[in-house]
Length: 105
Image (cartoon, rainbow, N blue to C red; front, side):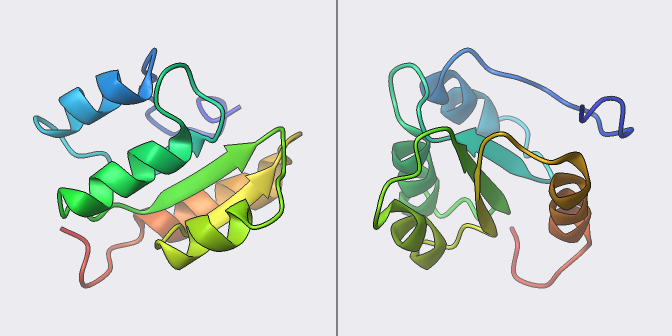
């Protein structure tokens, strides 16, 4: 869906694989699945914050749990979306995320 929307997309097998790669190159936006192998999307988001790596984060989940949305947003996620994802809202969020903005470093 994202490639068809003309985004350059890179995927990772796990949250740890992404965290290892983000030290070398920074994406314009990160889409984290809450339920990932190994580290959860929430844990990856937390570790990015601890490392002071500020990136626009969109968290997606198939298992919307009470309180998780609020925690992710309080920790700086741009959005928290429940699956199934709708193309237009997701593309609009990514467009918002990749617009140049002060403070992302």
